[in-house]
Image (tube, rainbow, N blue to C red; front, side):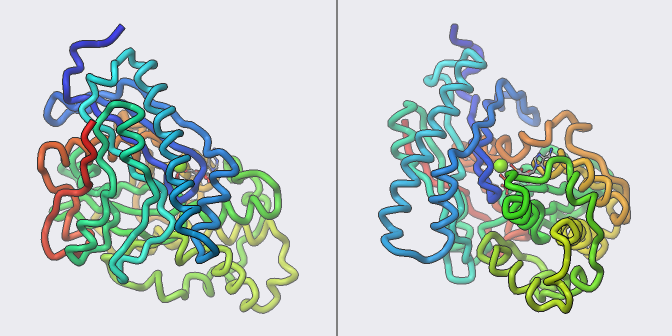
Length: 371
Ligand SMILES: Nc1ncnc2c1ncn2[C@@H]1O[C@H](COP(=O)(O)OP(=O)(O)OP(=O)(O)O)[C@@H](O)[C@H]1O
Ligand SMILES: [Mg+2]
């Protein structure tokens, strides 16, 4: 039975991030200012064929316009399935949902060239679900001279901002931090899971190294770690954002072929070094840009990786916890952010922060496809 009381301040957020592991969705009630009530959450795995299609679209290739359009349509089908599951789980009828915030799948991120491409089929999603869709969240900020990323800091500031300065750390494919203090700062710090996932897939056949068990068997190779950290990208000042365009299989191959003696390295040692690259690049960014922080709250899939969290806690200059402590499950934060961004769009509020993205002025993120 439909829950009539949810009214029109009920939103869905759908996120498929750079890890391409799946689609996270939430249905949330935002009717009370300053409050967010999660009514349902769902995670659907990315079908392997679609994942391969997206991965192939990250690099220039034959007939890519057609392949991109088809992959976008396929993603919209899964977004529609997620929407149906969320409505069922919360007993909410589609007509009671104000809008879906659908991120789409990033296949290119080149703000310096004026674009970031999130494949998506919002018209198809609106048609199938009968719900308004807000999509293409990054374009306007990029048009205003920004990076179009990260977009979540405004959400982090709204939900995790408090008197004590702290850092919200999202451990997705890429790691991004939001520094909450007097001013809000936010930027990508480099790879979180992306390179580790890639290496685990190549050497173990598993999608990722569960709880870092394999990495824990290896020895971090200091020379290789230092060489990786010497990539000038890490030293670049914010605003900065990144993706598969920068940290990918070619990047890793280049690093491994350059370092003396790495050909003889055990794969587990490379894995341990990649995990250290994640923890050290994050710690370096926190020391440099959030020296006042009293704590770091982690979210995203990497926050489930117990060994990664243990290693990160060793190198951070302040204590580490997760957003779960604040009542927000780690895997839901990004999807909730896109429900909140849809809400901001519908209410005409700008949510991309120029101080974070480097844009010349604030702008309303997203484009509306009415129901
Ligand atoms: N128990 C676990 N042990 C180790 N790694 C895990 C575990 N659970 C999740 N992960 C990691 O988290 C990743 C998925 O995280 P998440 O969905 O937050 O990233 P994402 O989809 O790339 O999102 P985004 O880039 O937008 O933040 C997986 O690919 C895997 O590497
Ligand atoms: Mg994911």
